[in-house]
Image 1 (cartoon, rainbow, N blue to C red):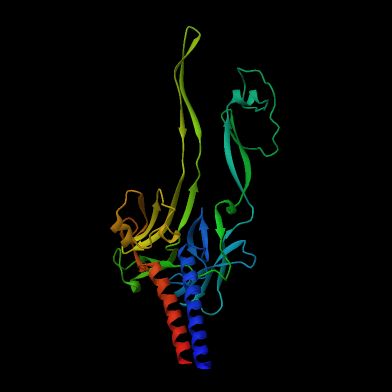
Image 2 (spheres, rainbow, N blue to C red):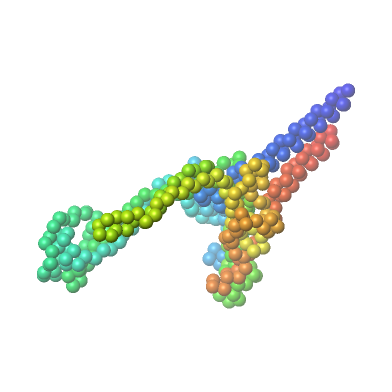
Amino acid sequence: YPHCALQIMSYSLLVLVIVLTTQICSGYLVSEPCRSMDYYGDPWIPIDVCANSYSTRYQGTYSERYVCNDDATAINVTVYWGHGCLGHTVINDVLIDLGIQTYCYNYTETFTCDELAYYNISNPECTTTTQSPIGGLNDTTMTPSSSNYGNISFVFKDCFNWTYSDVIDLNCDKTLPECQYTNFTYLDPLPDAKECTQEKSEANWHTENHVIGQCDCIHYPIQNSTFSNYYNYTIFNETYTFANYTTTVVRNETICSNYLCDEKGVWYVTYDYVNTSKSKDKWCLSSMTEVNELNSTDIHLYLEYDAGCDRDSGQFMEVDYCPEDSKAINILKYSLLVSITIIALLSH
């Protein structure tokens, strides 16, 4: 009896592990956030993922990755000598700061003698005016820069505040899963190398990452919007309406998008009129193979990064790593976890 009870407990634990694993897997497939920097809601670049590169500027191999600062208000790019992001960082620069940024710029505006007189600004080179001076211009940020043949130029300084937080979100939580991602490498041929070389020994090369498979959706609720369209014309001071009609727009749809990749490069894929009655893991497709097989008019493709030769720049871009099916990879991971659990239970 104790042996049977132990077996029952083992199988119960196994079932529990399988259920939990399925929930974790399906939760991830439903596109729970991964560690990424999101741009306008789209997962863009993965955080804490190492990318290897080579450059004669850095005297050989180096590697880099994007990391969050301690309070998750900025993302830094960290650079290491050698591959694998090992050892101490040699460069740690802020890539994006979500705090308020102040940007100032100068612009120049030139006034004629008549305009100077209008704004009550005196210029000895202006001998006659056609307008009487009216009003005045009192702007402490305006300083004269030059005068030429009666015209005078002023430099205006304009400043404004802005922040990335309106368009960028940082998913920095270490408990979030690592993103599925693709590697794509730009090979920039050395001076003595042939154009669009694919030999890494003949090029400076830089590897970047893009989040793959994360499904981002926007739901547009029902909206009753009325538009009035009319054209007025006037004859002998009488105004007549040529047309006047209203249109009611009712929109109730969900649009999703994600990034996928294949040998051609990295694709931005959008899905119109998503059937939300399906499970969420079906709202986006998980591979370009599925996209091409379905061949739906409600799916739109944009090649974000084009693999191959760019004759204008002489660069060659290759996709180093492209998970063929993000779902399959995740299911494989958790299936492996279940298998290990089963072996451990049976061994007892």
